Length: 194
Image (cartoon, rainbow, N blue to C red):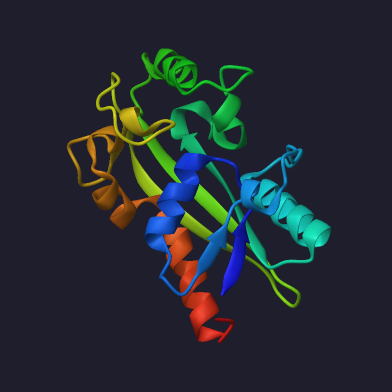
């Protein structure tokens, strides 16, 4: 099956390609000649995923999926959430985002958080979303240089290390994105779309 992953994020593309079976031929936005930015005006992670998938599907008349992800921290009322990528302002900067989170949560006792991904699938006949959640806590400091985004300050439940210390193969076994992708794959297989 040929399908477009509506993103320009090279880290996300790399992760998804490792997760998808070989029968999927995946293209990113650069590969289909789309150089613009899709305006994400949604108020939720779900809305932004749907906006991106609908936009690319309608513009190119192709099957595609898009994702939106965010870090949701209990003590910050679910923030940064939909604003995760630009939490410290524009242009987006992972290190500045991490520093802002660590500063805001430093005096909070509750460090519970979750990573959440929503994938929106859009084909000629189907519009559907798939959610993946990884629960954990926020560390007191930046630990690890693997991964991207908030990985160096997120400790998954049941682990003593941050995602920033995980090898990519280990992260892909438990990540919020892999949970959502596996739901997508199971749906495509069970509905004989591939």
